[in-house]
Length: 123
Image (cartoon, rainbow, N blue to C red; front, side, top):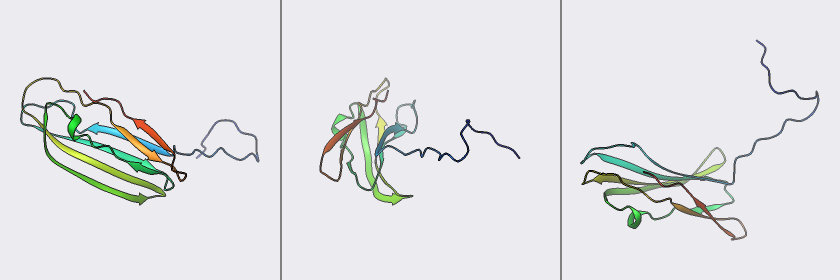
């Protein structure tokens, strides 16, 4: 079997692809739901071990949806990266559209310098 990749001079080292120091994500398990359905809203962060990430507290920013349960997993190290997760079990009491604002995560490098990471809002 022959595979092909982009042209490269023989003997030159390949570029190493590195992941960003911090990756954050906010998501829901379903985009539409009817009254009474449960929706799981999850905030997650993956980072280098040298970076400490704080997951935001979103409870006060979730308007119009009832928080039935919440929890947190991690931080735990997997494959050289630190994984953290916070989740909320939500329920809509009224028919309509809802917006969960973007979440702002904070990270701190080994020098203590703070950086913000914002996710997009969820409709």
